Structure formats: C-alpha cells, structure tokens
Length: 432
Image 1 (spheres, rainbow, N blue to C red):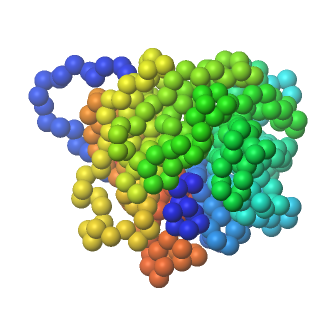
Image 2: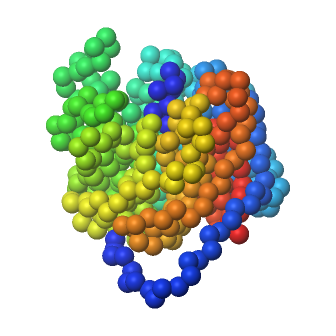
C-alpha cells in the first residue's frame, strides 16, 4: 500500500487446443453480506477456519483501529466477535496502524493452535516514538485473542508480512521498507542518501515459541548484490522490499522489491538466504513490484505493480535463476469509469492477487475484484468482477464530498469471496 503516498499520505505449457465449442457462461457475482466497522479506513482481509480478520489503515487521523475479527461461518450473517491490537484496549500502541494479518495453524514443541501475526507501522514514520514491528497473537479462540509477543523492527516497522509453519517450527518473514538505506550509519536525513548498507529490508524470525521470537536471518539487495536503494526507475525511483511471500514448504521466498522486480531466494537455511534470480522490467516500464501469488505448484508467478497504471504480469519461474515473462493483463476498457476520471488516482492500479486453481482474484482499487482465468497463462482471460457499492470517505481524503470504492484485499474460500474495501469495510460475495 506504500504507493498511496502519491495522495500526500500516502508453467507449465498452455493446454492443447480443444475442439471448437460454445464459450462457457461467465459466472455471476451475488452480494452475500456487507459490514462496515466504521471509525476510519480498512486494510487487508484474511480468512481462516470460518473467521475473517479485517485489518485497518492509518489515514490522516491514525485512529489505531486494530484487527476486527468476524465469525463468517454463516457468510450471510457476519458477526464481529473481537478486536485486538487496537489503541482503545492497548494505549501503548497509540500512533501505530495494523494493515496486514496472516493466520496459520501452528504445531511446535512450544505452541499448538491458531497463530496470527499482525504488522505494525508508526504513523509518524521512522522519527516517531510509536511502536513499529509485528505482533503475535493466539487466536485459537478467535473471540478472545491473546497477545503473545510484540517485536520491534526499525526503522519503519513491518509493512507486509508472512507466517509459515515449516515442520515442527514456524517462521515470520517480514518486509521493512527503506531499512537498508535509513538504518545505515551514514544515512543523511536531509539528502536521503547513504554510503554503506544498513540493516536489510527482509528479515526472518523463528516464532516456534511465539512468546519468545528470535531473528534468525536477513537479506538486502544493497549488501548482497551491490544495488543501491535509490537507483530505481520511473516516477518513484526506489529499490526496497514492499511485500514477501513464502511457499508452503518454506524453501522459497518471493520479495516484491519495488523497482528491482520480484527477488527469488532459497531459504531452506533461514539463517542464510541465498539469491537465485529476479524478474525484470522492460524499457520504459514504471516498475513498482508490489505483491505476488503462486500457481501451478510454484512454477507460475503472478506479480502486481502499484502505480497509476499498475497491471499484473505472469512469469514462468520453473527455473528460478531465469524467470521468463509470459504475459500481462489489462482489464476491458468498459470496466473503467465512464467519465474517464478517477477521483482517487488509484482506480487504474491493481493491488493484490489470490489464486484458486486456474483463477486469479485481483483486488483492483476502484475497479473492485476482478476474476481472471489463467488456464493459458500466456493469454489470461477476464471472466467477471464484483464491484462494491461506493461509500462515503470517512476522512474525505480519497474522494472528498463523494462516495467511492477502493478495494484493497481479496480472499476466496470456495465459491465465497471476501473483499476488504479501504472505504467501505468488509464485503462478502458468491460466484454463481
């Protein structure tokens, strides 16, 4: 979500051709439920064992809304059962926001149950005294979350984050944007430059005992590859880790490294991440690698880019050392506002992807949730979309005196899909 700073806050091969037949009828979307918790802006959504975890974003007022937990076992009747990491119940967390949460079942010698990791960032940036880092919570009983640990990660906290059980261990993998530059002992806050690398943007923590997390590994492109953070491309020239995703086996990490593309690391030894390769941009492309998803058993990478014209690209990464670009995807023109004017400046940008089989669900800000068929990843095909109803902007930041839609996150569970809207909260819809 870092690109929102523009608003001043902010392989497989294709299957063989089939005999000509009538094209399958596109599924329709049907709204199942909608909940707007109010109080400010919403962040990402994650669904685990019948509960939706709706994170929150800072806005200008930084209300510290924390993570709202909803019982969605009956999707048509979402029921809020708890809130955690909010400033009202935790005054020491004032001045922080919590935009990303991941929940996994973890079984280690020290902990068995449902474990949540939530990112914290300081509203005042690196110079603020507010807490920044990540928190670990026992959500085995989602109605009564229990904080196990807070881990500080300077200079700006954890932006996007991942939690993965690996055998009898569990790890948190986190992105700490701008760290390698701003934590440098030679960093000049006036010029925004440094001469030697600081602490890396990507860090790995062993959370097998979630009450006592320990950092075990780290990696930075400046130190390891000699690529200076400020040597980026496009309008916002920067190489920093925005997001991280890890495969289910805990052997590969995929770092969305903004203008550097997606960096692929071998993390079989978490203490010594090893560089394998990365995606590359074409001449004239803006850059801004924002997030990823995996398909085809980890052989297909979907890479999104967050900027004024951000779209996804598809990569064959069967050979991690030499990713091969297969295609890109542009939504049909009819999906864009008929006026051609987007009041938020974000409507033409994709945000996050989620994969189910041969389908990708993209959260696409003003365009809502787009469903794309990737049966042939060289020719991704638009299927349908869900567009949340516009809502009033709680701080009048993105669409002053208007109502708008800004879909941030998406999480499909079978034919039921959960979407978080920055403005309007939690939406639940179904494919029919």
